[in-house]
Structures are given as C-alpha cells and as structure tokens.
Image 1: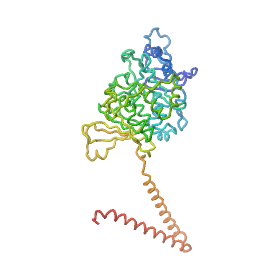
Image 2 (image 1 turned 180 degrees about the vertical axis):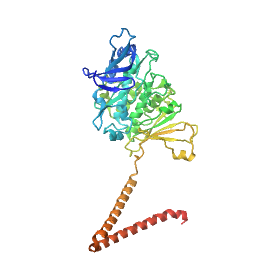
Image 3 (image 1 turned 45 degrees about the vertical axis):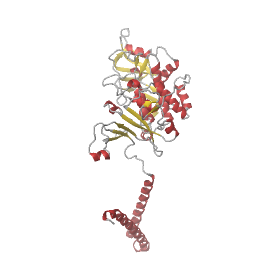
Image 4 (image 1 turned 90 degrees about the vertical axis):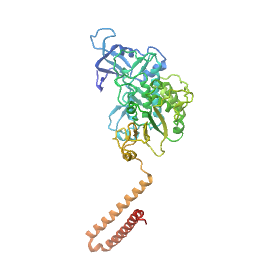
Amino acid sequence: MGELLAEGGEGRVFELPLHPHLVFKEYRHRANHAHLEDLVGWPESGDPDLIGRVRSSTSWPGSVVERGGSSGGRSRDAIGVLVARAPRRFSVRHRDGSTRLATLSYLTADPAYREVAYGLSLPASFGAERLGLVYALARVLEAFDRLEPRVGHGDLSSKNVLWSMQRGPEVFLIDCDNCERYGADGRSLSVEGRRRAMTPNWDDPAVPPGGNPALTSDRYSLALIFLRVVGAANFPVQARQRQGGSISIDFPIPPGFAGEVLLGPASPLWALCARGLSTELPESRPAPTEWVAALEAVLDGLGAAGMLHSVWSAQGGGPVRAAVPQPRVSMDSCRSDDGRTDVPTDVTVRPVVASVHHPRPARLVVKTGSSDPSGGLTRRSTSGGTGPTQSSSAAARGSSPPGSVTRQSTTPAGSVRADPAMGQISAGLRIALQWWLDAHRLLVRGIAGQGSAGAGENVQRLALCAAVDLAVAAFGLFLVAMAVAPFLGI
C-alpha cells in the first residue's frame, strides 16, 4: 500500500502506487462479504448507456479484499474494497497551493466568499454551469433507478459528490460501497441489520432516527442539492421538517429571460423541488428521469445544447434521448393541470426575482406555518452560522408562538449593499473633514515655527480657517434648528 489519502469513521483510504487509478479502502470493522460481492457484480445486465454512466461517474467497488487465510464461501468477512480513484480534474487548488477534492461544499455558498477564502473562481450562481452539474447528477441517479436491480446511494452529501467543469459539467460519486440494492417492490436485497451511514444536514428527514435511508432518499437529496448548488446557499429546511411543520421556500432567480421565463413560476422545476423535499409523501418524490427531462428543457432554452452534449460525452456517450413532457403545476394551488393529486402540501417552493443590482445570491426565506398569523422569531444565518437575532416586530410583541419560525440565509453581517448616493455623500464628507484637519494642522505648525518672518502668510491661513469654521458653525446651527423646530411648534 501507498500513502494514506483520507481517514474517516468507517475506515482509511490508501493509494496504490502500482495501480494509480485505484485506491484501497480499509474498513475499521469487517464488512459483510456477500453484500460487497453483490455490489461488485452489479449491474447484472442492462442498457450499456446506463452502465457507462455508472462506470464513468462513480467510484464503484471493483473487487473485495480479504485477509489472507480466510475460509471460503460468501459468509467470510471482508477487510476492504478496491474502488476507482477520483480523476485529478475533480479537485481544486487553493491559493496556498494545497489541493483538495472538489466537493459540493464549495458550491453551497456565495462564490465571492469562496474566492476570498480560497482564491477560487467558481461558477456563478443560477448559471447554466450549476444547472449542468445537477443535470449530470440526475443522469447518474437515473441509471441507478433504471438498472436491475435498482440501487440507492443513501448518502449524497457534500463530501460524497465531487464536481468538475474542466470538460463541462461532471460529477463523481464516492463511498459507493455504502450503496444498497433494491428489488422491484422497493425492499432492500441485503442482509438485515446492516447499518448505513448518513451525513447530518444532508440526510432524509423522512427516515426515522436510527433507520437506514430508503430508496426514495436519493430523490430528496437531489432536490436539496438543486437548491443548494444552483442557489449557492445553505437551505436549512431539515430541522423544521423533522418537527412536522410545513415550509415555504422563496428561491431567488435572476431577472430577465433566463430567470423569469425559464425559471419562472411556470417551470416544472419548482414542483419537482416541492415533491422531492416532501416528507408527507416521500413515495411520490419525482424519479430522476423527471429531473433529467426538466433540466434538459431549461438548458436547451438557455442555448446550452453544447453543455448537454458535453455531459453525455463525459458519461460514456449514448443516444440523445427525447425530453419527456412535464405537466405544468400551479405553485399557488399545489395541484397539477392534469389532475394529479400527489403534489405535497407540506412544502412549497416559489421563485422570486432577485434585485438586478444584487451581484450575489439573494437571500433565502424559509417560512414555516403557524396558527398565529402574527409571526415571531427571525433567525438570520449564513454558511458561517451566525447566531439568532430578534426581529423588530417580534421584539415589540415580546414573545413569539411556537412554530412560527422564519429562517433567513443571507450575506454575513456587514456585507449589506449600501445605497450608491449615500456612499458618495459619505465619501465627500470624509474628504472635507480631512481637508479641514490638514488646514488647521498647517496653521498651528506655521505659527509655532515661522515666527515674524511668516506672519503675513499665517494671517492669510488664519483668516481662511476662521471663514471656514464660521460657515461650518452656521450650517450646524441651521441643522439643529431644523431638527428642534417641530418640537417647539415653530
């Protein structure tokens, strides 16, 4: 074995000098050999196009590693697996020269912040590149869903989904030895009692505590990744969903044709998000095929057909598939035009046009339902996790009813965009104050150091400063008089 590459709760990952395209994942505790062998042999058969997507976009287990001297048979334990190593293009180089895996965490915050912190130039929020990355992920999950038997990853967190834009939008899934195979009835095909890891803040709130992710958990993750990657923000919805409350998400979209037409209220993407995030109807979460069709339509409308072809090429090629027509859904009524009734009522996602002057992702507002319409506590948070503050309306009332919580993900304190006119006035006042201080400083130095030789020049400086001081004093008295006049009844 070679150098230790990574270490986590499940085990350690080592490079293999003689096989640089592979890595060895060594488990801390012995794993079930039969389960891993089934994953290595998956898929048993299927569409070559779908299989190509899996082989090109995942670190799928290639072989099981056993300890020497183990007895034969599928009942023996495994100490690790050999998996495909992520290509170098799925990494980023920080300003300090260090190289890191390009995880989704780089894309779930304002690109300007990541540039300041790491010196990275990332795709702009709401752009076609980010939509293309979600499209590439949806195509991989579509292969998982259509091959036999079906497979669920179960832990599509920021650390397990890598991305690259070198050859166009690409994704690469790791930790695939945690995947599960499912039968036609949706039940797990593995031995009972096998625990599967899930990452906090990326797990499915419909899964009960201590339970394993379900086949539909990847569909929840896809909707959440769409919001966080395309919107370049952390959408804190899961904690509230576990409490059983309904949520309403205002998603900012850019003004103009791309935003208001292709991503406007008529776009099927928002109904897909609502259904995907629902904990009320997890069985009705949209299949990845629906996401693929909707994103193809949006990207084609953006004139990004070349990007679609680059995704197909990176994932093994294959024929161009005709888009599946998506029914229009009214976000106000939460019911589809074709009479479908599986649109949830516990989640609403609405597009809101962002300000044209706002260069960064507009704020996200997640409103939760409450029996008291008066509102309550307001929490403002960023990817850095600022603390809770109380809104002025809540402070005036002194209390807030349980459940009436509004979470707001916005830019950090101090980064609020100021009004341009006020900025110019403030700059002018600073210049005037500096000039006033410099004039008085020169006058004092002249009187102290020049004596009678420079008396005439000093008199001129003194007269100028006196005139300026008199004008400033008169203007100040005028402002004071204007301020107190209403209280004196003048």
